[in-house]
Each structure stands twice: as C-alpha cells, then as structure tokens.
Length: 339
Image (tube, rainbow, N blue to C red):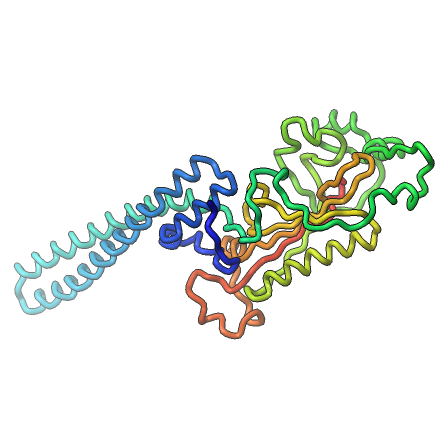
C-alpha cells in the first residue's frame, strides 16, 4: 500500500542517501504508478550504493588528508637533513595519493550507476491521488454544462447526427488525410490553407492498441498552449487550484460542457504529484475527451532543471536545507489545437 507524504516532501531524488533513507516510501509510490520490475530492482540497490558511496568518499578524503600531512612532514625532514626519513615519508605520501585515486575511480563508477537510476524515478504522488492502474480508475470530481441541452441550444434539427471533427474538416476542405499519409505516414495531419507559426510537439506513441486511431484526437505531431507557474511551497497548492479554475473559466465562457477528473496513480504523469484533467463533451463521439491537463509537480521539475529560488519568492531562502530548492512548478497544457 502506498505510504502517505506531503506535497512539500516530494524531493531528494538527486541525493542517493535521501533515497536510501526513504526507500520504502519511494518504492510504494513507484508500485502505485505500476513501475517496471527493472526500476523496482534498481531501487532496491540504492541503499547499498549509497552506503558504498559514503565509504568511498570517506576513504578518499582520509587519504587526501594523510597525503597533505605527509607532504608537509617530507619537507620538514628534508630541511633537517634526514633524507632517509624524508624518503620514507614521501613513499607513504605517494601510497596515500594512490589510495585516494583508487577511491575516486570507484566513486565515479558508483555515481555512474546511481545516475543511471535516479532520472527514472518518478515524482512522489500527492495523498489526494487515488489508487488505480489506468484512466478507468480516474475519479470524476465535477461536471459543468448540460449535454442533453446541446441540440436545442445549438439549433440542431430533429434527427441531426453530429459528425466527427475529421468529417467536418473534410467537408469544409480543410482536412486531407490521404495526402498526410503519403507525406508522413499514419497519424499525421495535413491541413489546407495558411496558419500561424506554432511550436509543435512530437510523440512516438500515438493511440493505444487501436484506440484513438481516427482523426486528430491522437497524432504523432500536435500543437498546444502550455503555461507554467513558478511559485513558493506555501502557495503551490492554491496556485494549482487557481490554474485549474482559470482553465475551467475558459471552457465555461465558451459554453462547452465539461467534467473535471482527478487522475489516479497509474495515470498520473511521471513528473506530476497531482493532476486534474478537464474533459470536454464531443457530440460527434458522444464522449468526454481531455482538452486540458493541470499538474502540480512540486519541486520535482525545479530540482531536475536546477532552478534556484528567486529572492521574491521567500524572505529566508538560505535557511532551507541544501539540495531542497524553495521553488515549486505548476503546469498546464491547454487546448491541443488539433482537437
């Protein structure tokens, strides 16, 4: 069963000692996320690696300190004219240097192993995240808008059947699926007409085992609007909720029926500790589909990006423990334009 944690405690992945001390906690969250057996096996070795790393650092530093001390004694012996003592001390100093070098090489090997594990450890989940392995286990938090009132609200004639978006686009001459396949292969789109320049996103995965294979719902290339808030630990949760509310406000102004969904552990993104999806009702499909995703990543992303706290975010940033940045990121991607 997943062990509880506060949002402010989602840190430490860059520190193997911290991972080792909290291994049960981190492992339980990885299991909730349906982590691969290889990741779980790697996690189990972290404690041993962390202990080995500490020992090697101590050995290296002790040897370096001894070499420094002996070097001073060599100089004193030579100055006093005791060449035999100076030679013995010089040999001991050299051996201490060799030991330090050996420890440094072993430390590099251990660090390389650890560095191969830590980037694959996902963020800790918020206590608010429900257990579950897929989107089927997500929790619908709220609905807005009356789907049944759409026909009268939009003036649909009796017997009218809403079309899929790609059918609408094709009828308007703005969707050329066959040309897209010829140019780029399956799961790409070709649009006619001029468009403004947008930063495009790409993904290798598109659709899951035959799901979402039609139209523009899930393609290899897509554009989206993304907003990231940089905030303090005390404001992280409130800013996350405010971000969700802003996205909901846009949908309400457009009059689009939607629902807010709290993602379960198995469906929450790698870097997120808590995520709400906003799903808009698509009449052509007769289903709600995700149009906006709002995540709180805690300090997980800021740590991985090496972002330092700004003075405006906290009055006493120096009082925070080392390797614990006093900065949180809240992110939203909204309205994937192909949808």
